[in-house]
Amino acid sequence: MSGVGRGRWVAWLVVVGVVLAALNLRAAVTSTGAVLHEISAGLEMSGALSGLLTTLPVVCFAVFGAGTPWLARRAGEQRLLVVALGLIGAGLLARAVVGSAWLFLAFSVVALAGIALGNVLIPTLIKRHFSARIGVMMTVYATSLGVGTMLGAALTLPIERAAGGNWRVALGVWASMALIAAVPWLAVLRDNPKQDQEGTYAGPRTLVRSRLAWAIAGYFGSQGLLAYVLFGWLLQVLLDGGYTEGQAGLVLGVFTALSIPSSLVVPALTARMRNVRKLVVLFCTLYAVGFAGLLTGHALWGSAIVVGIAMGGFPMALALLPLRTRTAEGTAALSGFAQSVGYLIAGVGPLMIGLLYDATGGWTWPFTVLFVVVAAQLATGWYAGADRVLEDEIQAHAVPDETGEEPETPQGHIGRSQTKVATRGDLTSPRATTDQE
Image 1 (tube, helix red, strand yellow):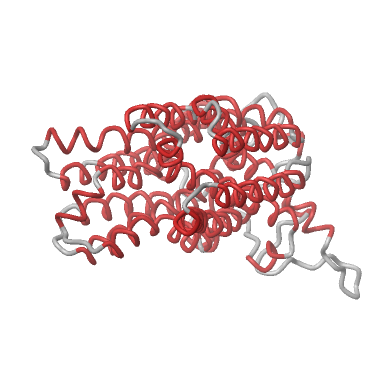
Image 2 (cartoon, rainbow, N blue to C red):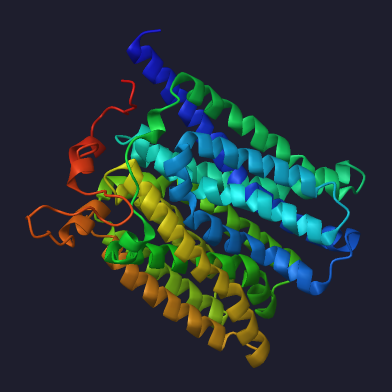
């Protein structure tokens, strides 16, 4: 096979690999929620353990996501993604057969650790293989992520019923999807085993000093917080507003489905606009309008739809990870930092809103907090939305030593010497790039 033909073959393998891997990054979480009552009863879980199970995803995403760039530097991104998919498959399969609640939690952590690795690695791999097609590929990624979320939520219960009420079968079946997703990445590794081991990564001490890194982490976290709160509490808001369970369930279904068209449109639009402050203002305004309607009880249907459209800020946050960096190494560093900090912020939301709702018996104070979160999202999104990149900011803050040479940033340099790998012009090139072309 010629060099050009080989490059196209690898590119298509990566596209398929991104789609299949992304399908696995939320299905394991939403499938658990679909049969949580059956799991709790079957394993005799206490209320505290059930609550811990629902909290594990954000904790694992934050903890394991933080170490992903360090692991990728040593193992290689593609190898590490194969390991991640193996962890997802093994964890899902093992937890489906154990008879202990604590073992179920332990193997859930194994699967969630794999998902955390994938959360960071896939934007990095998109940056490495498709620096000229980031908008398109982030659209593919975000859409696949949304489809995986819906599949886990929609199919697990029917699978359980088809299996005669066996929740273990309903959960274990998702392990096969993770193993299938590893196949194209194994083929990529066989064809080009050393491609993802070039370059070095910025360490967390470098990212902590970056205002852009903090802005993206804050935007990602505030968006995640609102999403977790809405998925957890929107049904109760609608019920308290006078809707029946059937009506509220229908609204929630439409609200959830809106993530698919948002994922199809927003990442490509983000890549095309470069400066996305207008989108930040639009999404924050929609949140404010929708929350006002939900709080006052006016036009609940329409208000929920408006909020669902506002959640297009999440695929935009994902798209910013590769768009605000010049290199794959920079994307890995930013992705690990922003997602770790962001998921810690997001995890606080449902608990905080639940405590306020229980304490006050109404939605005034909970929505007051959500309005404050929207204001924080506007502030962080305004900075992150400007057309700037991480490597330039780090280089600008580097202090020359006595010889006048620019020092390496701590734990890995991603300054000018490496930004030649992908210049701003490369991002708008009409040709997708791989290292074999």
